[in-house]
Length: 289
Image (spheres, rainbow, N blue to C red):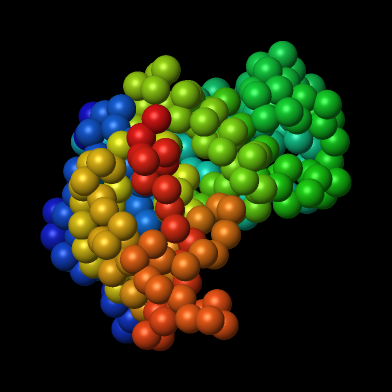
């Protein structure tokens, strides 16, 4: 089932208009990354797709269901089919890692099975297997407050992979990871979605990761879609314009600032004509897989 937003707007209670005139369609099995400067509305858009926020205007369907017209039972079933990866996973600090992983399936289990898993984990092998994909199998019975921020973020990804949802929503899923681990974690996320035919929608800070792992890019600025294109058609000029409010700086995972290819530098090593050095994304190596 597809997910679709048509003319969607979102205004918060304080009157701030976070999103306006948003129309996009996410087909079954499609992978889409949304990028844009800070405050563009990326998290708000992700939360809309997860039914955590109700649009102020327009029409929203998630996996073919309008969550605001669904019954309570239909809404529970819908949310069980959505897996959300948060930038800061909402995991109780005293909870053990295995319990955090198994919680991914609670929406699919009968109540008795969920309660039993609190007393004795019901699928130790399954939890350990998914953690092994992130080099965390040895932390299975550790408390979550003993993990680093990066390890906890990988546990959050592993929990959603264990859940096996039809729609994966990832809000800055690798922001706490170094470039090597971030790339590997996204690789696991993409491989899982491809293998199961699940849709994957990710809000990413790092432009280079978006270009490498996602065949479709949505550029968002000030709550509006600036472009929605196949990755191969996204140019460096488009990206500079998207991030113009941040000096044209393209955020990348490596964060290595260099002078623009087409900008001269003066004798002091600063860009001429007031140009700002940017982290140039090597499109020939980052686009697609």
